[in-house]
Every structure is written in structure tokens, then in C-alpha cells.
Image 1: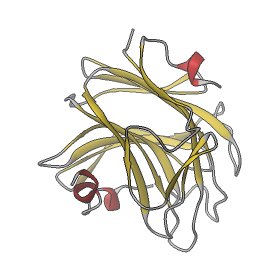
Image 2: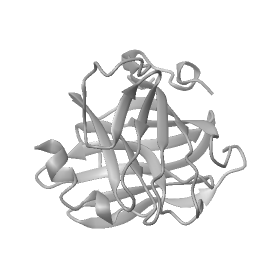
Image 3: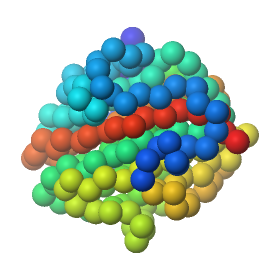
Length: 207
């Protein structure tokens, strides 16, 4: 029911270091993706095992995996994201990132998203509307191109959100905090299948 609601249209509107060091708080859950056993619900196009959650959505579509064991308002979450090969790495057709504050009825969530060209920003999707929470821009501390791996981190406490890449602060904003689910997201370009790889997921209490 959860993923069916998500994929009913909300995600279609979205534009385009080691977590043990990156996440600072007391660990709630971590996953090295060594096997498919775990508290994840996911769509087609997701394969977990061998140290990665590989997300390979069909062209022009998305793949989602959600950690459903707990809804949480204040958190510190990080994951390594390996960029796929993309025809247009800066245009937002291929995006991957971290979902947070995902709630249902009505569907609402935030998505910290990055592109293979190194763009990074955050959007809020609420009742079918896409709002920009933090503008998309490039940062010189993000490694770009196919096969490049970066550690992304999002912290939230009392509605204050901070986004990091490779332990460098990239953005901060105030959000509409609520208990919600956390997950991972990937999208392929319209004319190409992009293979995103996620590794070393860690969820902690914020400091």
C-alpha cells in the first residue's frame, strides 16, 4: 500500500567517505546490503546484495526502497551513492537520493537529490506539488561522473535540516517536520536505463 501510494504520481513530479564517520549520533539501524534480508520494502528495479542496493529503474521511471520499521522526526541518516553512466548528467533526468519525512494520506515527503554531474538539492513534494527546499547547485567537494562514489548525509532536528556531501556542509533549511519514513530513491533518464548503487546505509539519532 505504501509504495503503491508513492508511485501513484508523487515521485513522477520530482525534477531532477564512510557513513561510520559521517553519521555522528547513536545508531538506530545500519545496513551494508550484504544480503536481501532486511526491513526494506521496495519497488521493481531494486536488487539488494553483495554490498550494494542496486537501483535500476526502467527508462523514464523510478525505483524506491523504504525503511518501514520506524517513522522518525529527528534523525541523522547517511549513505554512499555511486553515480551511474548518464547521457545528460546535469539535466536531472537521472537522479538519486535520500527520502525523508515520508507520510501518507496525503502523500508528502522530502527528497535530497543528486545528479551524476554533481548537482545537489532538496525538494518537498506535498499533495502533488513540488516545492524547492534547497536550490540545486554544484559543489567542488562532490566527485562527478559515472562510477564516482560520494557520501551524502541529512540531519534533522526540530525542523532544522542540514545536508552534507563528503562531510562538507552543503545546505541548510527549515522543513515541515513530522514523523515519517526514510528511504532511498533513483530515477532513470527518459531514453536510458541508469544503474544507481547505494551502500553503507546508516540511520542514527541526531546529536
